[in-house]
Image 1 (tube, rainbow, N blue to C red):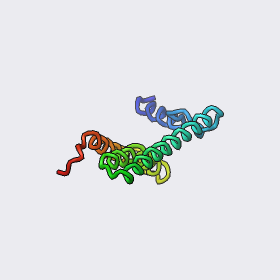
Image 2 (cartoon, rainbow, N blue to C red; image 1 turned 45 degrees about the vertical axis):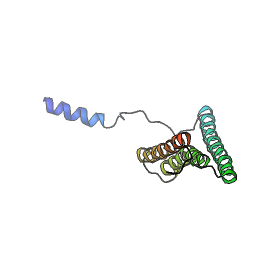
Image 3 (cartoon, rainbow, N blue to C red; image 1 turned 120 degrees about the horizontal axis):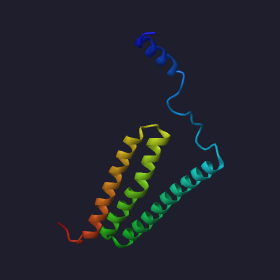
Length: 127
């Protein structure tokens, strides 16, 4: 047997063996399903809590007209609601790669953080 023949035999034999173990669908066991439901529930609660805080702050802005409240409310909306829903919709529902979805969600977080920082340091004086 020549070395090339043994390499060819090895390659032919190794193609039938998977390199990674075959994994079943996610959520087959009870603990996996409970974990996934808890994860989804935490996602929904965080989105609803972010919406609640934003709506309360924006109502305060409507009553007082204070620019800081507007900046803070929109910032929280960007950080929590827009970033999470964008990430979920683009990655899960539309099938866009998680890298792209995370990049867009990070953009929302950065914009929200800039708005919140602006709300903190805003003097209220017109420029």
